[in-house]
Amino acid sequence: MKNIALKPTILLVDDSKENRKQIEDSLCNDYNIMEACSGEEAISILNRNITKIDMVLLKLYDTKINGLEVLAIMNQHLWLDFMPVIVICKNSDEANIIQAYDMGAVAYINKPYDRMIVRQRIRNLLSLYQKQRDMRKMLEQQVYENEKNNNVMITILAHIVEFRNGESGMHVMHIQTITKLLLQCLQKKPNNYNLTDNDVLLIATASALHDVGKISVDDKILNKPGRLNSEEFEVIKKHSAIGADMLKDMEIYNNNKLIKTAYEICRWHHERYDGKGYPDGLVGEEIPISAQVVSIADVYDALTSERCYKKAYSHEKAMEMIENGECGAFNPLLLECLEDIHEQLIIELNREYVDSPEIDMNLLSKVADEIVEKQMGKENAEDNKKSYSKRKDLVKMKAEFYSSTVKEIQFDYDAVHDIVKLSPYASEVLGLPEEIVSPNSKNQDYLGKVNIAKIINDIRNKTSPDNPRLDMNVEVKKEGVISIYKLQMMSLWSDEDKARYLGVVGRIIPVG
Image (cartoon, rainbow, N blue to C red; front, side, top):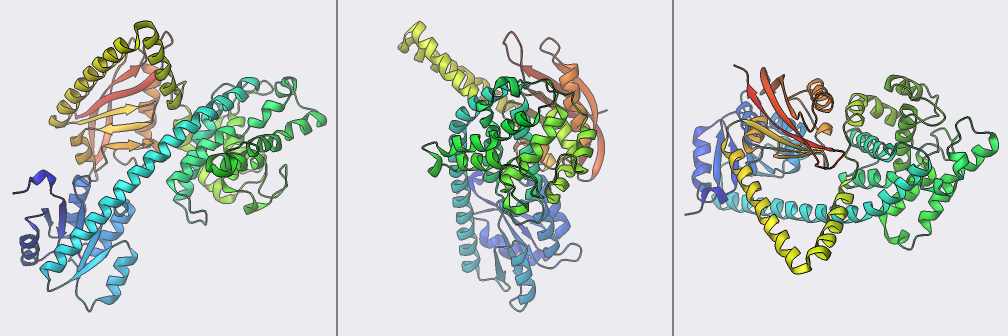
């Protein structure tokens, strides 16, 4: 008999008990079957078990929420991106079958059921989706490794420019953050750009090189504490073309999409939508979308940051100036995106940044290993590293065991990589995946943006390495019901002389 934990789980949605039994009898040897007698119950089960269900068999009609409405709700939650749905219908119902396909269903089965066809169709689709998941993981890992390596060069060059330009050291991080938020918002709107998640990552990474051409500009002009005269301004304006030429002259330019994207951004991020920018006077969609987005990000951060020649404007004033056209003309759709994300901008840009990006931490780790090897000899160093790694794995295993057995909402936020990890129970109760990348860009109905902003602010201002604990009451939304919960947290810090904020662990428990 098969181990139940290894069998895929299918949610069967049909208002007929007889139909459900007939299908379950033919599938129960190979699959775990969860049953729902209505569309309403199906949505409730999906919300609670989204990470456990591999496929949905969905009858198209029901007395309360019909199958098409269930498909619409699954679309809203993006569940159809990773979960196949087979609709159950009559052969004569061609119009609704076509509509179900248009809404994301991947196949249909007729009544009366042919058991062999049903089993084979399910087996084929689950196999196909598993292969797609494996391929996606492999591609994501390849992209991650490539971006990790490329980020070494980008981080070094970008911070050289910042240092010479007298900037705070945060400008590049801000540009990447704003660029990512704008692009993620743009993905959700009707447009012709067809941006993928990889495109967002690529453009946000390449945005760090937008001002690399300033390496060629005299320090006296870059850091002049007053207005530039016309001659100095003409010198400054050349930095975009010079930087682009520097990138184009690189040997890897022709075969590297990241460098080509950086070239677009570098050359054209000072263009304006009405053609009044530089260096080429491009108009509208002649400007690559990568450069359009970084252009707004650059202007916003320049306005809200202090420079040697100006004080910082408030967020509200900067938004007003950009929307009123005081900084040049921008794509109306991107201005709409900027307005949509303006609250999130405040949260993200006020978030405690870790000084070194992830790739630099990896490099530091390698350097540390080399130093240890030189001091102790390679053989002893390897033994010590293995011993440490084993102890670390044991601690991790213990933590994961306790987390998996406790019935409470627990979370672990990694500020270095901007990832939230939920305990299995929290994932099930909240209807969220156990690992959430860039959580502030995701739906936050369970806590709400106001709570998130307050939590981030209080962690930054009310905790420290010496006083890391923080408790507060929050409203939590579960299945449409709002209840008061206590949020108990502990902030995590590095053990350097100047401690850096690394993240927070915590739990959410009912009050009373």
